[in-house]
Figure 1: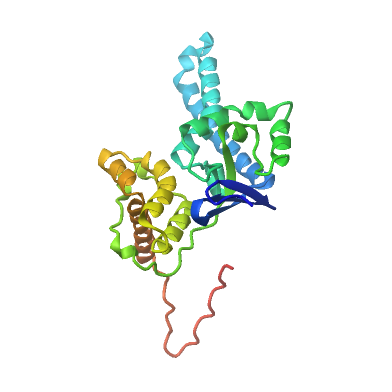
Figure 2: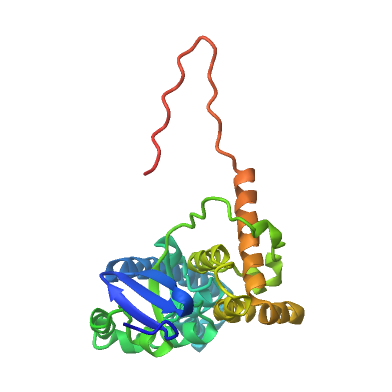
Length: 288
């Protein structure tokens, strides 16, 4: 049995669990080869469409230089940037997602459960060349099925894994959350939003805040605060996150709750209207 102060991980079927101090337990559903292949093919289609429109437009602009060989060099540069920069760009700015991963509800995270940054996105995408050998990502596929977190070579080197996400279902009132003013989302670079799993852990800490000594609560909160603080622009905000990590996390959670409530208010479910003297229409089938 692992000690409570030591981080450990274990895998059950397609689930991986991370345990950190005070029994704060993170559970993730790993993305299998099938869903990752679907996301890859969708991204491949997006890259192909971008390449087509860029080449078509540039072929007109560079038509006077067609006999110099310069356009061919430009096309190769664009193809190279799309091949190696597409995933790195989106996974950095979209918090571990590309258009394909977002469509399949997949996300790249660190093996410790945190959001990835530019370095991890760059390493795992550049090493796709190693995953490809000898043909059709054979090395990456074999590596993934032989390790418990389904990591390809790029993931192993970058310390990342691909997980499946579910839509956030934060139900019920959180007692005491109103005591924390929402943290302004614009304080984060590019209006970064924490992942659903991070918000779930913050919610768990809020519910247990009176069961832990304040110093221990802040110590645990600091584990989640550090990667979030790196995405803050203002020094005063980073200082708040460092000096009062638990309060900072609860304010972030309050901001997320406020945004969800605003979205519900702006898009209310249409009320059924009864027409006098007529049979009420049959309700539409819902999604399960």
